[in-house]
Length: 55
Image: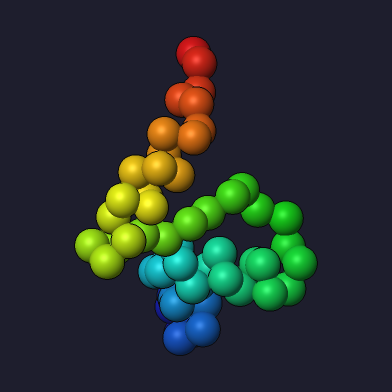
């Protein structure tokens, strides 16, 4: 068989699933939040509270 298993593909294919998996299993990862139309304003507030990386 070539390629990842179904479980591996899910981890690769969905950032939200992968982040939830890492949090659930105490795997260190960068902060992450998910927003939609329903909480758009909350998303804008979240973004405005974070500085952009400097290069």
